[in-house]
Length: 201
Length: 156
Image (cartoon, each protein chain N blue to C red):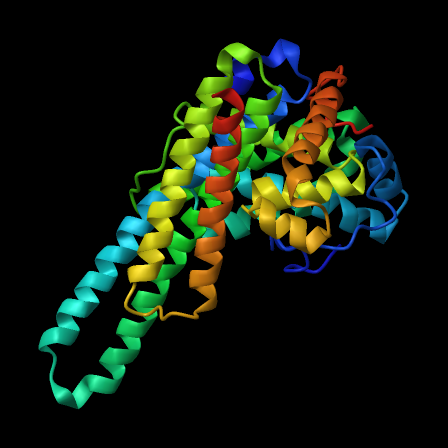
């Protein structure tokens, strides 16, 4: 068992491991075989996803989210053998996270009444989280240069001028480059036959 | 709007529309932040105006920090204006002719925004002539203006 506190939703950029390109099913297989690096990769791949469900979907505070986060990955680790369809890792983790979030909210409710949202209220947020995760997965399949430029413009809010200066690209070409990368991203997303299967290309 | 309406005639249109939406979202966020930091700076100026001499150093330091923030946000807005004008000019070059005037109008509006934002940087009490922030704001203002003028000239 991994020590508690080992996995954290830091949100920091981490170095890509050699296992990053594995599909979810391949990753599960490696985890079952006892590969510790595969386990780290699995946690890294799903850490933001689990955290987003806790914080955005259930409006949890950091402390509760951290507890659920730890519980989810502990259970994933101990119950991985019970997963029937290895390609369904993500839906399984999502279900597990939601259940543990509800348990935590129910427990907190007994301790202190709070204005926690119902699952019904959070439905749109869950859909957004799913969509965001799909896009994030698809982005990782794009060429490195595309990942870089999309991240700078859409995630870091960098200006064309800053992107141009830092990537040493002509300023007048940035908008076109971003548009072309978005075109590739669209092709990747359109090409996914099973958008909720949790598998990777 | 220009990119969305002429997406059939131009491969990059959808990607340009997505960037326009991102810039729009960024502008809305920055406008709110700008209002907030300016209000904070005004309050700090008010307090500084009637404060006692004993806590003058701390008060001046707080005021300086708030003025810094009040200059940083318009600078970001000026750069955003330059990007928006550049994107509008790019769209205007490639879109269907029917929408070129709309793209030019968008570029001109963005250039106006960049100009206004650069002016706010310039009049900030914490910014002096020769300040790098002022140079950046003016460069953004100029870039936005050039982009808008270029497109307007091409359709006159």
